[in-house]
Image (cartoon, rainbow, N blue to C red):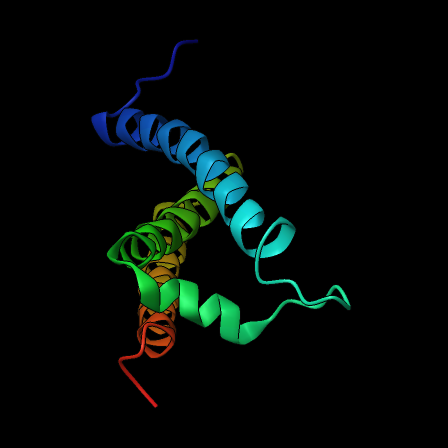
Length: 124
């Protein structure tokens, strides 16, 4: 029996694929710049001051991380929602889970932006 797919389901399906592709780029770039080739001391420990200098040095890195974090949060929570949706929750339970995911997502992005703001030199 065929099920009807809503426009919202099609949009979230599409965005899940797009964010997945973009996250692959973001993750490889992040690993290369901050973990593999730069900012590592002779002992193999990540040098925090070097990472902070990179983040403060250019507008590109600020934009990069401001975009990277919401993509991560969306991709993770949307993926979890799709897993939960497979269980065919009752309407009320589904609304509660969605509301909790929205609250969690907004909170995670807000905390990340505040943290990045401090790393960018905007805070103490």
